Picture 1 (cartoon, each protein chain N blue to C red):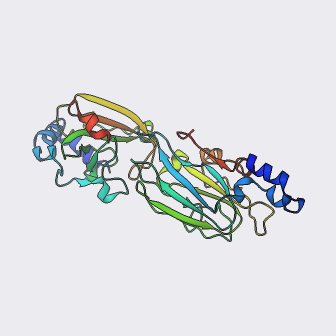
Picture 2: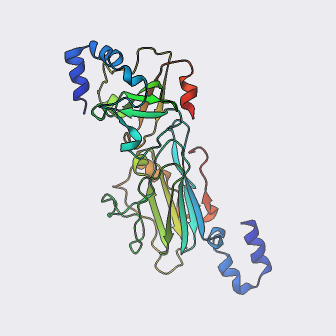
Picture 3: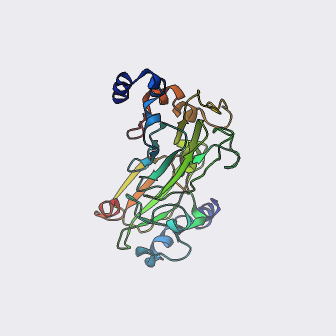
Length: 176
Length: 139
């Protein structure tokens, strides 16, 4: 964020508006989301929990948990008839189970908010949120308002779009 | 899914566990044979799980187990049970569970958030069968 601010101050006003977007939206197009767990499996989590990316970026989900299998699965009717929590125009994904060190990539082209979960760990609130672009982008679809298909724990875990845009990446240390 | 356990408890009482432990010397070395299957062959889990080793289970006994836990050399090192917390809270009990072998030198009980096969919060109860077992299963 500091680097971005310095650039904005030294460059012409014509590009200031573009640079005023969240810093992460100007970052490299590949983001890594780690699937992690404590040694005995007491806690499991995606790291980062929330991330902001520009459209056409790719996210690589990597299982860093040596003792567990994980998935990254979009909330979508195509996946186990779940209520949609990704933009309507976006394609859903399901990584299927990833063993340790295995990975799965998704490229995000539609602006909006994407919520996803780990199939065997949704009850432990192992969920994540990816924010693609900003509300100013054409076709943007904000976060789902549904509260019927997910638990209160899941809803409490998901960071807001504002938090994600402000911080770029919301890291989780040891699941906390 | 609990019928086999209930049956053994009702008809065979405690003799069931003795039969399990003493009548299957082959279980001391991996693979234990029928009816056990290697967990990683039927579920998306690593072949060797740090802390638990290589697990075998009889599918009829899920979710509680016993799971037979072997070290890298195929030596039976622990017997593991997995008991969903909600089921315990709702009155389910797991009685007269069999053990891999009678010698137990220590027991660990701890929480697990879930994993393929038992994807609800549950307790792991780990019976270690010799003094070095925990270290051999660690990684």
